Image 1 (spheres, rainbow, N blue to C red):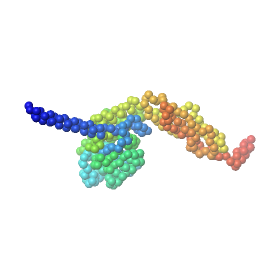
Image 2: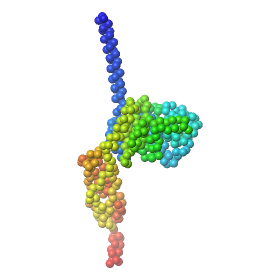
Image 3: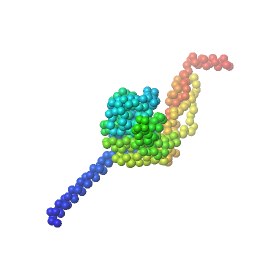
Image 4: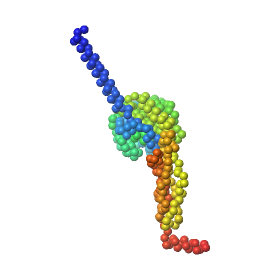
Length: 383
């Protein structure tokens, strides 16, 4: 073979190697663009146990439906709508594409079946029917979604429609915000039968629904929530579970592989249940039950303590919590009920975790000349 031919082959192989290398580098870069946002929280306190980029704003696509479900749940709770109410499908709802239950214009269907369709089947048309029932238009409902997000503390979230299928790149949230949303959903017990259902039917058995959240089939104590995918959001999942009155929520956003997203969400929950404890720290010893009052009708005032919140700690750190009482020696009358006179400080490794207020349990009026004379007179009469 001549040198020219050899050089040609070398150039061809070099070009092929360059192309392969380019593809691999871009694939790795694209993979890094995903798979870097998750959070694990304790549902009651919303304390973050484990996280990675939990406050990074990312597209969440059809996970937006969780906010739709939350608003519908609140409306059911306050009596605005009922699970057995029948709603009529609009032309706009009928026009929805993607995941759907193929509702026809004018078709009537119950709120309960629509919730099934949204939660289990991820149905875009069902989400619109529910949104229109509450706010007349999807646009009005979207405003309600964003208002509600702000109300519950979702500081880095924005929705542009009720189903997240359209404009999926513009449904923006964070792993932590979505976890807050799921913690709110967990408060509605009647939703659980929908969230934990693996397979069901609607429209008289004509339309099958299969849950994308495969963990509902087998995970111990599952509370449900949602798994979803769009081109821009990647694979996302939010899942909660409860055991022995303790609930944890894990949210994983932006994975390229569905199995990896499910596995990550499951491993986070497993870690929570096996390695962490939720408990209420004990009151310190020698808690004062009263303190002195100066210039009052009574010489002392009874005390009470605000509720001690639960904490989440690694199993090995449960005995590391210490407490300290900081309280004034006396108060001047008049003393109103609920007046703060001190606090119980709780520490872990000498770092303050939280405080519990110590407050007066009753009102103590100020003594004056008239009241002093009344007291003297009563004592003289009973002498």
